[in-house]
Image (cartoon, rainbow, N blue to C red; front, side, top):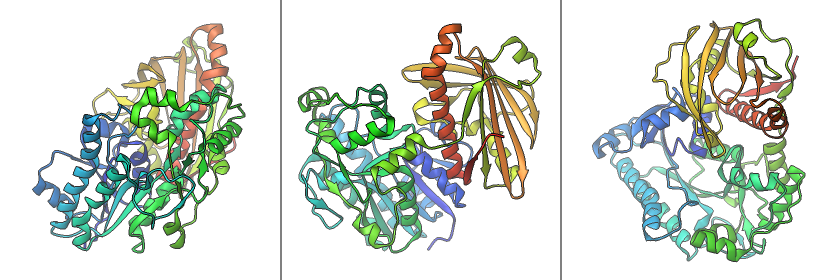
Length: 485
């Protein structure tokens, strides 16, 4: 058995993988990410994980796996996307079945076998089941997705035969901030244009992102967790009930259903993911003592959509005396404070690396760093990166204007969407923990129109961005929001 603290992680740059990587780092694991594009992976994973290319030779893969504690395999092409023609179905199979088989063969042949193989799967294993109550003992379904999940799981058999503890995480719809299914659902619901899909009677097995992460962490560490495990909340809901719950959480009506025929016309076979489902419950996890923080849909959505990260936005005040702010007058001030469960040196080192920006930026913003690393932080240093707001891609250039290591640094926007943007990061030692305060003085563009956009678009978006950042810090270090002084 291998006694290292390295976890070999696939799918690390995806919505689930990047957050899991932060949680693994908090527990003291070193992440070795198996990636197709090291450049893209580094942009979203930061400086922490080591990277291993997917085109590594079989012998090289066996050597890497001989040195790790465990393998968590999440890779797979997204199910939502192009229509499921023959070519797309082959891509979905290859990205799941073939990669799992390759890993399983390498694990079985490794000189020192890892302690656990945690394999992604999906509740689609069960297929459409009407109102039947479904748990891990239920049989596989008969449609394309069911057979894909069955073959995906069976591809791990060489590792099982070699005696490696293997757990299959049959994941439902993961609800999380700024990514996954919820991010796609929110825009019409926020405008009061949401509604049920088809009849609304189809069941939606769902799970809060925090519960999904903790279940995977238990499967990694607890030797009792093996075989199939349903990663879904104990109270599945129908689509109609989910629609009402999301409307309640947003205080919006949900009067506009999407007819089944329209979804089928627009999406083809992919529409089956929306119009069918199963009433899945996590019997195995609960029997092993796993407790869900968010067992019901209302508490989950309240946490994701109305969480109090104590982010204050108001008129500009107490702006620093600096020539940038004298030339670019700010109209607003954003403030955020949190107590981070890590020493100041560790927290400052993380935040003072531009390469780590992607790890705390919402996936929907498609962050990428254009300036080549390593980036030396000093007064006057300019840093280029790209972000995306909705369908619009933006270039952003920042300049470091103040730099006092271990205390404070500030950056201003030289090119980008704002008329003024000055971001001050301040760090204060609190015993073995750190008080971190962000203050952003800014102005939206377009004068009076910008004032309207501030209320309707800019301020809500900034709350979302800094809220995601707070969640990322909670996963990476442990953190709690504090009242603004």
